[in-house]
Image (tube, rainbow over all chains, first blue to last red; front, side, top):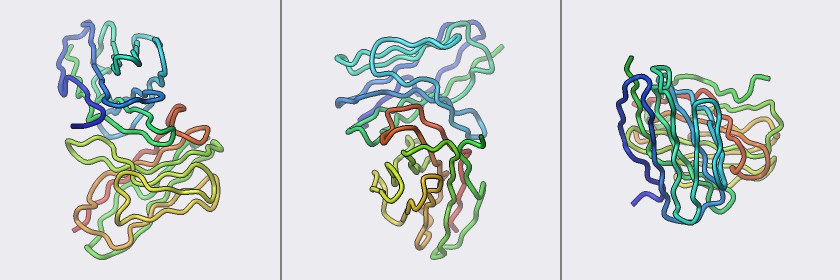
Length: 108
Length: 114
């Protein structure tokens, strides 16, 4: 069992839909990252969370440390949001363990 | 700032050859790390460094070597390439001595071992 699991693995949406991607982890972490990887490979950091909620534009990330769960929400989705979204937990203060990613496709 | 740079972008090796993947950052970050990304698997940590002169092993270190002689550079050496090392390799850096801060990734190196 992976220490960091994401769901769903694949997600298809129509433009304008509200999207939720989930991340759960089996052991305690000090922080959780959400990353975005576009086709072509570049990886960009979206959020780093240790508690509560963060918002940037149409993206919202939440984390519940006690329940070992985080969510990434995209409001008013757009085709340019099509990418792989990856969560990663920070363990033992010096390592990241990554989920396998959620592939999102948004159609016009 | 150039951010995190990686060279080469693409490399083909024969089994048994050695090579060095270069990674450099100009943000004065203490923490640097190397990951490999394989289909169907999450990014996996190969080696990491919390500052110049300090390196440690990650999840999949076998067959790889690193050094950190300066804050800016963190090269990854493949000692004797094997087909199982065919992968995409990413270097990342961040402030502080751990990965709790925002991660900055390089563009990746695609490696094919024949």
